[in-house]
Length: 353
Image (cartoon, rainbow, N blue to C red; front, side):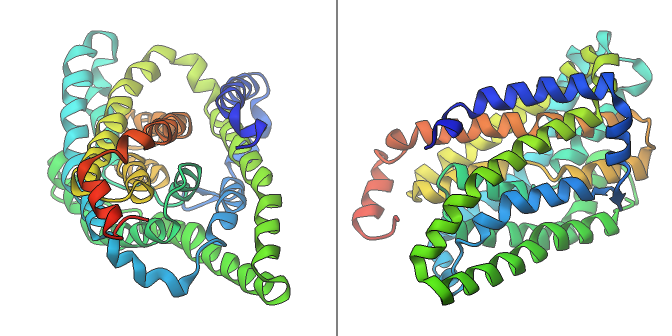
């Protein structure tokens, strides 16, 4: 780990403060950048995400994707957490905290909207940023790509029914443009670019040349991550200053949900004997959210100024810092994880990597 990465938490905190301050003091540039979007997908942020994930996707050897079947336990755990636990646990936490405990401090006419926004946030698993979290936790890149692709397929058919069930709505307006554009921008395009880059470098310089290129790109990827933080908090700087209590209260159930689902996925993988390089991204995929889709759905269903839209925006704001904390947790507990009886037995048998 480089010295820069070692102090990543400090840089993240500074970028959050800088984003809020700049967004409040000089909002015009952030409004201009924020308006550069198609179907609620911000194009400058998408470009930064490319810089973050292309180096990680360039590590993937498509010829080795067949080995993902070895990690069926990790895939099963992640699917259960994403689709059978997370939306329902978030609904429960929303009702407990927003609908009951925090009700006296929140606008009464927005309570139902806040809960709806939290549910929308939890009903869509993260797509692009998962590659960053997986890389930072030394996750298995082939597993991560396969799991993200599988979640995207399931999301097409499961998002609307789950949201409709939990919100009590007979029909859900799914922002298909946002969903499909996000998949293309965050999965298809980066994979194609990364694989073209990988093949060209391997053809001209072999594995050593690829390793050198990835090492040079790593600081750029981290810089893009920090720039993304500044933009996200800058976009909402005025709202954060105007409604700090509401935003802090809405963050509580989101934070609990992230740590709950990440911890559950992590422990279930350990109980199943899965390798740490799979358990780490499984926990991170299980905890993170596809905030572009959640924000677009909230605006489509309830309006731009609704409590639902604000709740999904809070998810946007805490996504990066809280997921970085989960990355740190799974990294620092690796030795404990690998002392598990089933993990050690599968490792001896050749199941673990």
